[in-house]
Amino acid sequence: MPDPEKPEPEKPEKEKSEKDKAEKLEKEKAPAAAEPQPPVAAKPAAAQPEEDSSQSFFGEPLVGFDPNEISGSLIVIEGMDGSGRSTQISLLQEWLESEGFSVQTSGLRRSNLVGRDIDQLLAKNAVTRLTLALMYSTDFFDQVEHRIVPALKSGAVVLADRYVFTLITRGVVRGINRDYLSGLYAMALRPHLTFWLNVRPETAFGREFRKAQAISYWEAGRDMSLSHDLYWSFIRYQTMIKREFEAMAKKHSFVELDGEASVPTVNKLLRQRIAEHLGIRGTKYTPSSALAHLWR
Amino acid sequence: METQEVQKQPPRTEPVKSSTLPQPGRPVPSRAYPGALIVVEGTDGSGKSTQLYLLKRWLEIGGYRLHFTEWNSSPLVKAATRRGKQRRLLTPTTFSLLHAADFADRCERQIMPLLQGDYLVLADRYVYTAFARDGARGCPQKWLRNLYRFAPVPDITFYFRAPLEVAVQRILSGRPKLKYYEAGMDLGLSYDRAESFRLFQARILEGYDNMVESDNFVVLDGTLPVNKLQKQMRDIVASKIDLKRFAPRAAEAE
Image 1: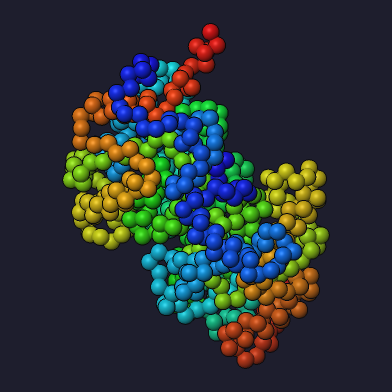
Image 2: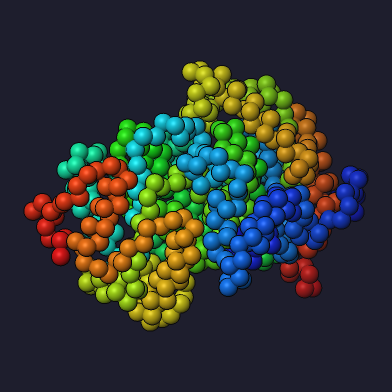
């Protein structure tokens, strides 16, 4: 398929030359020679240095949007299934609200536009990878435009349960061209803080299994035919994702946290960094009775 | 079909094979496959769909292996598009992405497999519609070009060009009410739907005109009588595409 797939020689020569020159230069400059194809080298900001002026975005600004209108903060929590993201977000929301901040959340498949459609596509498993990737990007930008940006304009703190990093990574491990995906998300807002809750796939497996007494088709990356064995399929898939994240962590200055530590420990570290960013003095917090069950 | 022998149109260089290879300066990359792709583009009311229908009939009657595909028609994405339009949830970005998802679905599940399987694929509107229309809505061309990078380059792209007033009149006279997005009301160009439509179409027309050279459009005059235009179209197809390749397989065997 002439495509955003692995083999990269499909960009039209004209466009290619300029962009590639820039990329090659970058690659040569940075003698991270260990990897033949440093996965980070192709990240949007790196590929298009000429566009760095609009720092609020990875690439070009969103259509009809003025970055100066933003007064809130975009805080992203990334991490694989079972890394504790949603637990931490619930707790952080409560803490921030108790500190007097208005909080908005976002996450994959939560858009009004196509959230449910994606659920259906996933359930039917009748969708090809590129179509799915584009449906996810539609879902993402719908939330950016109707949820994230309005909240940021009003000065709220947006806690994003996953962000473009997950979406790009999922595409990349499925063989969709990295530059293609970076270009696709070039209009995404750059987060103020990005946390990565790093856990071992083996730990994540146990946590996910306990949650639902099963591992889902997509969590195990079964569309990729990695193994008929569910456990190994999960481990292999999540390991691929993890490697991509390791490569991105530096490039996008992720704050990496040990997702295997206890909930209170991880939460404390998150609060410290966020407090610093928002200028909150104290970071004391004990969850209310409604959330006490998460505090273990 | 006889037309193959009657090549009155000046045949432009090599047909078929070469045009499926990646070509410098062409916006959408492609790799070699045996099939061929014919695309029609133009503003609403330019007559392109009528012409493609007649071309399809001609080829169907001749028994050629072909598949017809239409812009924005994938069942997977339909519900979302309808909801987005009804509730006016769509912004230039999501409008564009949803159409790209629709196209990706048709591309991955129909267009590419059929081109690989040696079919003639006819497309009513193609990526250029997105470049012109979403561009008119303000999406950056660079972003759009990247978005559709996976699309195979057509063997022939017919651009049916009709003057703005002609095309607009054709649509306005035939339709009781223009739809919100169709009229480009989301752009806030005018409160009057007909006027908004006119202004929107003018921008789209400009977008198409800008691609004529860079994307090798074969420009046809949309104001010509239907049968004359169809004759031109058939001649060009016959001269640029080795139609014998798509002849009925049974006949080949005998």
